[in-house]
Image (cartoon, rainbow, N blue to C red; front, top):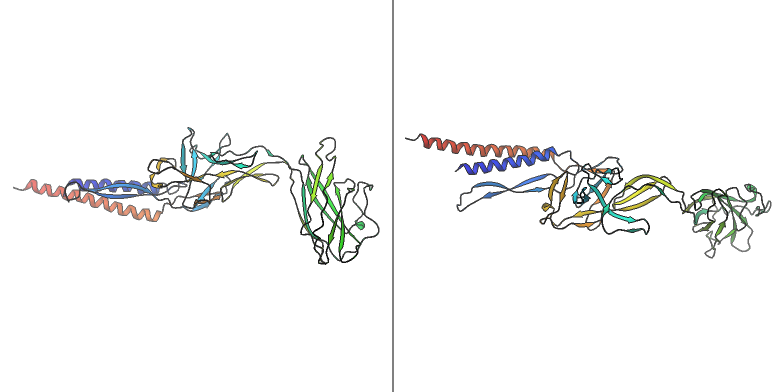
Length: 412
């Protein structure tokens, strides 16, 4: 037995304690991955071993606890497979599990180390998703308004309503007032938008007509804001079963010269779809959709589980800005830690395999959340005790060797 074996054991145990200490120190670091030491024996030409050495330091790429933060820019990789792709100020590409981001002064999403998040961004002019990762920037400005072109009411017209004879529904020459409630059976008010994003109240008036045979007929009249009732009407024909006759084809209604002289907008052309409308012996009830909206300012950002980066606007609309880029590697253990909770690729790791969350085995994303460290404190404390005992045992080996040499020196 020589001093070499004990000394190598001390060095290996000391390195192990360093690794354990680093794990414990980073137990609160977001996205940190704990490391473990792998040991190997040392031999030369003799069968007697020369001690031990640290063969490798491996990181445990298991998922940590996903904790909700409420921060709109925070995101967690909700699974073991995948790394965020970021770039540093010099343009070098790095990879991290830390999803704590916030806008810098230019509006780019960066972490505390100044690394900028990358994603496949959408070309807003064409709506196509890019194929090369680009830096993510928080949008500014308004979303443009969209004029209503399609109105889709879905309702039940009460089959028990009586046909109205007098007073008849007002025609186009009627004054700009609300029609007499006794001249129609039901009304449906709703909001539509012109090309400038101005809101207008569209009211549909439903008037039951007399009809021959086993069909039922309702006329639909239209009024925009407080203007006169539009001269064009639509007719809804129902079968004896109370469903809309498939042959019913409502005409488009055009409202011209809207907005006045101060803010004239394009003519408002509305296409009506009454699919799903019925005439049963039940109370009048309705729901509706329309595809227009006013202008809206940017309000917030949200991250979907599939990695969609979504901008939310004050008018209730959303717009997808891009899709997060996640990276995987053939050999994660080949990645080189560079500090700041980041890694860079090496020849040992292989080239990155890029994709979007939830595809090709990559993890999904949890928005407004972060992934906590995967350090198991209980296990690390046990490992520390074992490493300490190993260190003490190797120190005892050196002490024993010293005592043997002392014995040899004192022999006479």
